[in-house]
Length: 93
Image 1 (cartoon, rainbow, N blue to C red):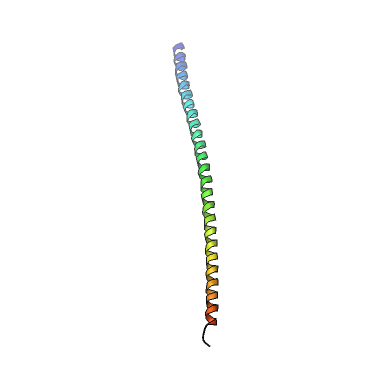
Image 2: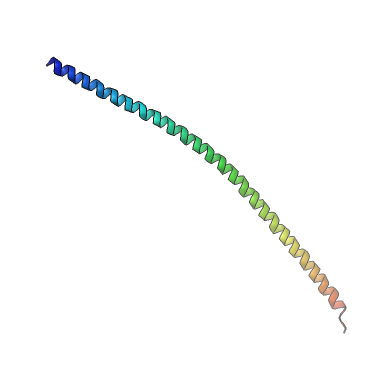
């Protein structure tokens, strides 16, 4: 009876040691994954900020280009209008 109890105690302690080792490994893996998640989140925030700046710059450049095109079109229209007016004054009657 005593030897069976001693064997059971040894088996229990071995199983307990295995479980504790497994738990320690899981905790270490969890810590490593949490660190990776934090690094990835930081990189994502950095990339997001960079992309927001680039998008803003592209929008500003596009708005400036649209303004230049509008001004050029208005200028060209004025030139055409003046040319038409001046041409109509010189037509023979």
